[in-house]
Length: 115
Image (cartoon, rainbow, N blue to C red; front, top):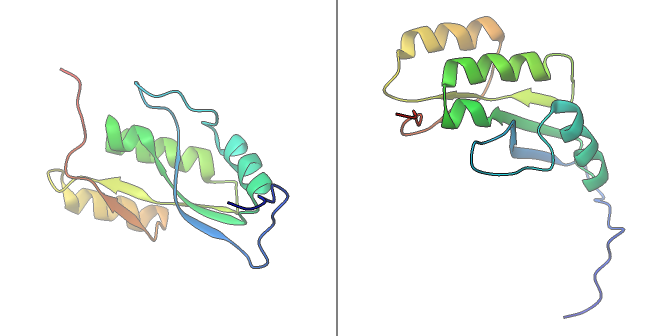
């Protein structure tokens, strides 16, 4: 299989477009904060990342998107991606996207709600 170079560093700037911040109710994660994410990115040679909120995907998209903005607002290397479900009020969602200056949206079929 060959020798694996664990000291590999990319020769170009890397933009990761599939990162999430936060915890899930059923999955342990080693990093769940913006600061921890940035540390992990630096170790992996990632310069910038598009991030969404796990809370927004699996629990409450509006609350999760608000938590995401609180987390990334002061971090220039993290770009927020809002989460929306087609079953939500998309007009209100669009206004929030515009108000926050968010330039990327992740659509999920439905936000999971615990009974």
